[in-house]
Figure 1 (cartoon, rainbow, N blue to C red):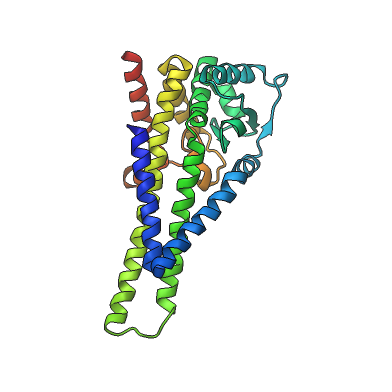
Figure 2 (cartoon, rainbow, N blue to C red):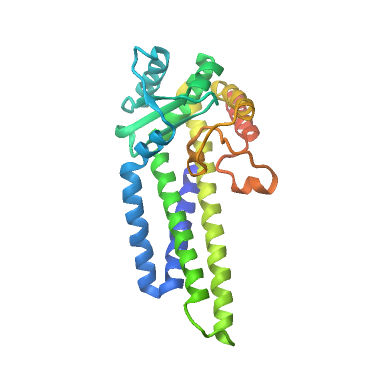
Length: 281
């Protein structure tokens, strides 16, 4: 269900990109928008993992340095039939983790020093299984493409708004109406693109929870870990770039109420409820 939802949302995002391109420049604008997004995706596909790891000052650790961490990752990778990803440690006390890499053959998992102190071995296995599930289903690539297309839509919409406001002197009658229409439509397109991107991110989190629970062998491992991580991230805020917050297993950005619509992660309570339901089944 989550997989089908992701495909539908990705299709909507692509349609929105073509539409706003055609709105700005007709057929040529639509073609330009697709080429622009493709070039952005190419760059992000090849370099995003190195950029993110460097951004968090993640350090590669050997098996001699972190034997338990390597043992758990290797066991889960074998169980999931994927290559052993590289293992990194982030020097932060806030408990969190993420996976990165363009495909299972070029993947890495990174955990903070805080999560290693906070979780027991079963809970850590639940978290790492979640991250390896992201790798197995190429969620990192999907999330990157979604974020890039949404970013391209926002950039083109911004250019269109500035062009509409300062591109001509005809502000009477139809000219003014066209200006207002352009401003409204491009603003709505930017908001819609962001909401679709966030919906994709939340859908992939639910799927990684389910896949991780199966990989770890017990949904309650991850359920207990999420409860601890939720409390831990509130107690020790993480130094994070908002553009990469969607990659972390729990969001370091607290958003409630209407702001929850703009959250990259589903509510922790709902994720735990679903995992507990899986365990009872």
